Image (cartoon, rainbow, N blue to C red):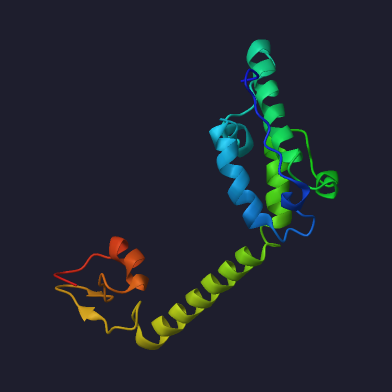
Length: 167
């Protein structure tokens, strides 16, 4: 891994900003690059630190983890680095997630949209007794909710609800 290791370093205007306002942009650009360098398993934690008993594996893991950590640190603002646990690439990435996922306006908007949609679906369900507002159907031996393939709100229900015959 150390042979041919290339460093991607954005200009300072593209670094992850302290206020997290460019988190989505930054994450969208750095993640595929880290995956292409085969560093993502160290960042995501799917390549865990080996036990101390296997010195060779541990040394190799630490070398690659340090490369992954360097890639992250060189592409974030210095003030962002100051508040992170930089003991491993995973610890650093997890710290970034904790700090910036909710600070990102796009993530906030998406979360608010999902919350509003879920709230409206629950209201419709309470008013109509149905998942998507269509009346309930009497099955052969059981009463079941309406299910269809046209309404996006029915897609999740389709897999989990058994129906007597037809939609």
